Length: 328
Image (cartoon, rainbow, N blue to C red):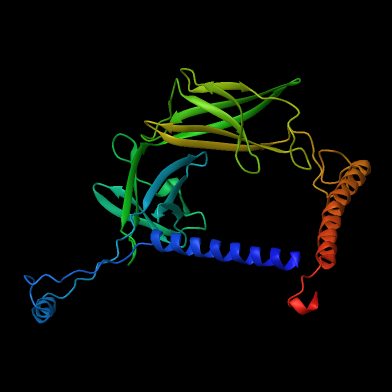
């Protein structure tokens, strides 16, 4: 009899809670107010006529405005790499524009002479190499280039122009006893004669997988030359070769220059895939660590399994109250 009374009390409490929750939801939800219509407004038929006379104008989708990055790199073989990048903001997120046609021109006497075009890659980059023999310079030894993106139905057109003086950067590795040095020479070649460029900061780099590693920097003297000490025992390829790179970046007069050479100054690193010994810093951990990890995981998940089992067992052993007074 006590069990029936408790069950009845629980059911009554549940009904009261459901009723209170329903009333709260009704008060919190916004309700639509109804009122008397304004008789001063125009009839519905007149409103429909006005709407028919003024058709709704569809909003035209806004065009994407691409962002252009354009620079030129003068190489030691007298050629020039024209590098362009295209990006655009889509829903406030920068997106690289790939498979877009970028056309390059050389501007001579205010006339555009087409050099060629390149399709951007997955990173939105396009690189076009121009041979130095085919370029024309003005009286000051300058060259001017233009990149043009014609646009399409969804994107606006864009273009960018750069100009700089012709110059050449040379790199020469020198080894004296155990001392390694890199000698560079920077000269202006736009007017036909080689003119040394003094007081220019040239960086020395080593080619790596992602970005070049900077190992030193030197400033050219009055002869346009500089010497930078090179560190020993840098890891190279399987034969110990290193790609040395000299760079002049973002110069106001000459822009970007680059020269490279391959030298056997590194320590050989095998490119064969071999099984490494078990170590904390490798993907093959020590056996004691692996066993400890397995024991801890088994202990943790074992507790979870025991708790779930006990919950199901208690639910099965819970006494069911009689549904009829005659079954007492």
